[in-house]
Image 1: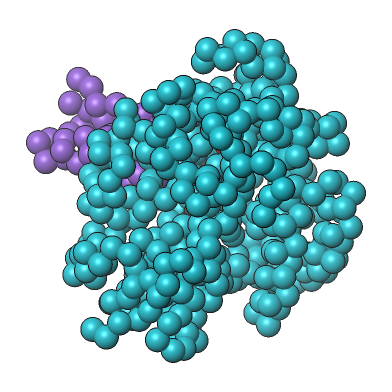
Image 2: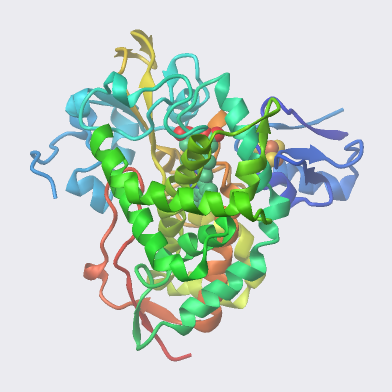
Length: 64
Length: 402
Ligand code: HEM
Ligand code: SF4
């Protein structure tokens, strides 16, 4: 499973990189970006899901 | 406070300046959500108030049918003077696409997490110094603490002289009070502010340094530096958007802790809880409500909206919608899932949210570090700001022995 941020939807609310700094980072404008290719293991999956459930813009996707 | 008759039914004549709404709006919104999710009023020349998360979210994200050309509700329908399209008075908050994106991109780098996180030691020192100045068993956590933090931070960011802080705060009062005055009056009132800011800009042009003023004077749109009016406009926006909003959030959070000893004790004993608690403070006591104007006559969310009708975007009401939040009416200090919209939604999402969160967290951390136990000295003496920004103003707090 992989996590991705839709840049069209992300407004830089910054919840993802505060909750899961090992998975998400921010760019120069403060928008969220995924570190690396976004592949999740059992541990990071939980964190990614927590970040997803806190993103007000519904901009985080976890998919095959 | 108001010479208008008291509101009898908020579904048909809502008024955000009505004493009942100012004192405690939450039961009103809950009632509206159950009866008629979009309330109407003939006051202010006519307008609508969606009380649900779905309604607020739909309108906030819909820049085709709604405009941000004015975001503060005036006394009647807006006149052409109020609406200098397409840039607006204070870009980007009053701009619509496509100009909005340009104005927003300009300021975002200055408020991104990198530069903002670097301010933490400065903000911490500032809060500690303000706390040193609080005297006696009863302190005014609103007027003597929360109120001073955002202006002092912004003054430092702008690189204006430290000794000018009292003057700077006077200017902020002028700007915040004049926000909905007629244009001519506003120009007159703002004159001393503009004079001071222009002098600061000239000084920065002569002696550039590493601060927000120099950043704004040097940043380029399509190879062009900004006109001084644009730089002044952006500075005024930062004052309007960044001061009483953050002050209100700090005040509401301290008010909550002063009246909920269990939550205070948990935060004191579990400092790691702070980031999660901050989001719940923001959800539960969201201070900011913004306006839109309807662009053209249409049927929307089951209402017959007319061109230039007001929309009051109740982000604080959306945050209490049980359809979106489990136990929405409960303050849960360790709430794990919290998609609150205190900073808005869509393209106008608060550009200063990283700074706001940092100020709020550090202000609370420093206060409870120095005063691990406190309570409201006189609950009836607490006053709340009216209008589109909600938070305590007078906030007497009694410091208790450990
Ligand atoms: C707790 C404190 C704050 C809250 C709750 C808050 C809330 C908001 C909200 C709800 C909006 C959206 C407006 C709309 O949709 O029309 C907004 C926009 C904005 N805020 Fe904040 N704000 C806070 C602090 C700050 C600070 C500290 C700054 C900067 C110093 C700031 C700068 C801005 C700017 C520039 C915009 C306009 C963004 C745009 O239109 O693209 N805010 N804020
Ligand atoms: S939480 Fe959502 S909106 Fe915020 S930065 Fe992350 S992806 Fe973007």
